[in-house]
Length: 362
Image (cartoon, rainbow, N blue to C red; front, side, top):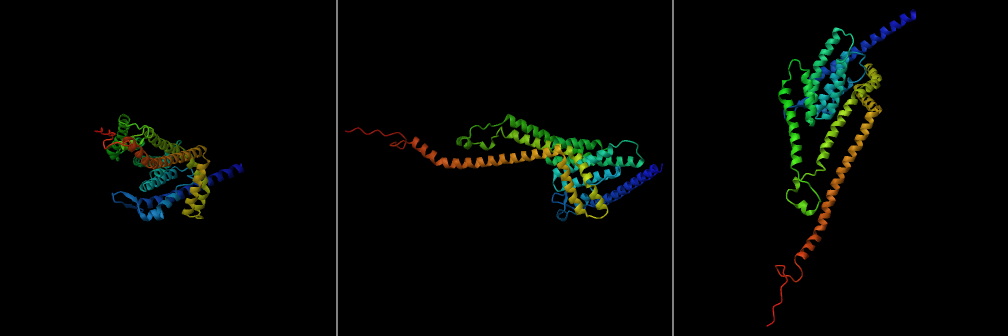
């Protein structure tokens, strides 16, 4: 009986300590998000758009603060999980304004994973948990729209439309009408334009055959389309998109492993034994370790690295072949011109190329 009583007290103390740590983490994140919301790290460019300021690009003050609170345990707190998702979202927006769209998309995927964890949380909930879910649902709407804008800038219009529509599905007060009126029609127009261009290329194409000098010199050669090359380019773009999608699938698992590896560092940071810069460094190391321990992701990265190396080698080989071809053509040209001159005007021929007959003797 005494042992059971001591165990109950110990569990209560553990729960109390976890709540205290979660509350401290919530306060730390809220301070960073409030500082980020002041937009002191942004400036307006020549086009009138927000971008990361020159000072921030050099010092990365806001970025380091966001990175410092983006990892660690959530202690079962829905509020803390939701705030972590918001941090990932703001990091994605930061990268978006740096025009680093693939990095932005990866961070948006991590934010979505955290948001889904909050929204899909089951079991009995108190009023505070319900409020957290309602706030998360509203914020997740903006995440989908920002994600879609990054995809639109990357040229992935079909996926952008899907994200735009997902965001509008969460827009219960219809505050993002511009998405329905402008963004979605623009992306759909680009999709139709791309499909039409592919059809036109299929119907109006000049097939290149043997690469002789005469054919290369013919008028309109620059407009010729190599049927073997065009599909490869389109396939390569599709493959890049598939790789990005596959990596996003592993994001949740990698992030969970990263959080576990970061737990000791987070504890040291909260005790002020390490600073934000050291925490960021350790997070990078933990992230690389988590990705390395993911067998499927490691296999994907290795295969993708080999693929990129093969593509670069092929492009370099094609460029080298083209240069060698031109050099060979230049070397052959004097000989071919000399042979052509001899064949066109035989020895003893007159100006017209016809051999003159001797005049009869009188």
